[in-house]
Image (tube, rainbow, N blue to C red; front, side, top):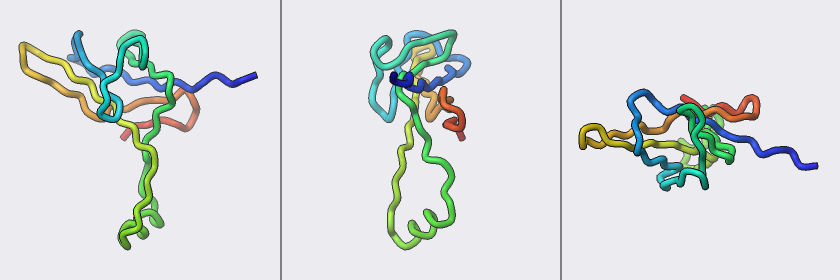
Length: 104
């Protein structure tokens, strides 16, 4: 039996009005295909991840020009207010898996 996939949730900030566009890592997402909305919360079936804190060894390696990369998902929402564009950038998210929160 397969375990269910972890979902990630992003609460829409106050002031976001429909219509809005959701981006994951700069790529527009489609409602119903890439995410759904439940009570002003965007629900992604994919597990989103944040890079996390930069530890001593990763910092040390970076200081010597040796790069290390980890998955670092970002969710942005764009909408308009009275014809003026608004963007909420790098929104915090929570994962259904314990210990996998992705926020600042």
